[in-house]
Image (cartoon, rainbow, N blue to C red; front, side):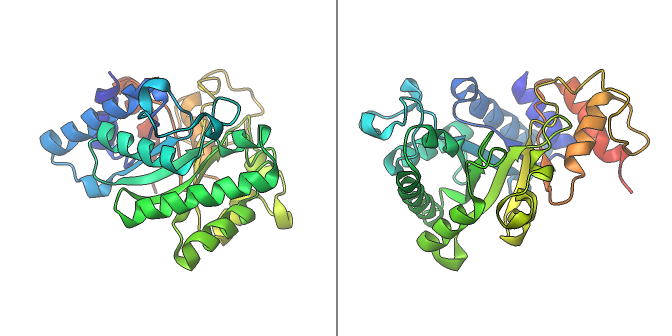
Length: 281
């Protein structure tokens, strides 16, 4: 089912796939690989026209090579951004995805570390992680890296300028910290409304730093797919469903490059990607 949805999305014109090693305990990455391979082999698709993103940060016992992670490197017993661990996770994700190079590799919810370590230790770990990710870029394992967060920027736990400064310290002006993922939807609008450092929103800061913003949770785990209230912000005419209206809200905000939508069936793909056709022009 999932592989079919990936293939259908690519055939319909989608060109960005977001997954994670931990989603469905590696099965999400493997289904992505199957769908992408069928798109290329059977539909004449072009791998270079598809952006494949995945994430690392949460150790699963069956997904970590013995010796790649020390217990002291796992914050609160649940999260790690240790360099050797990231190298191991990237290798495994490349294998799962059937790819020589992952386009975007995210540190998954790095703000989790801050529940267990202080700010200075956190930044030391971030710099070490960024150094490992810059090495992964150099050896062709990934093209770019970023942070995929839930509370990090919404709550102010993470400082985007501090992370950019750390990346510049490690990788110079040509560093590869180029992507940011955070939730934005009708029910979670902090990325638009909450001032970040310097008074602007995190979207504004990202644009000033040359960072591409991908927003997640466009449908808020399905809660915005139906029964939107009358005070929902107006959207373009021609949208037929509440799901389309919610997705259009997220994808049309200034500074947003793409809005992620979880689609596990071909029917969901057809409904949601009709949005691009119905709002064209």
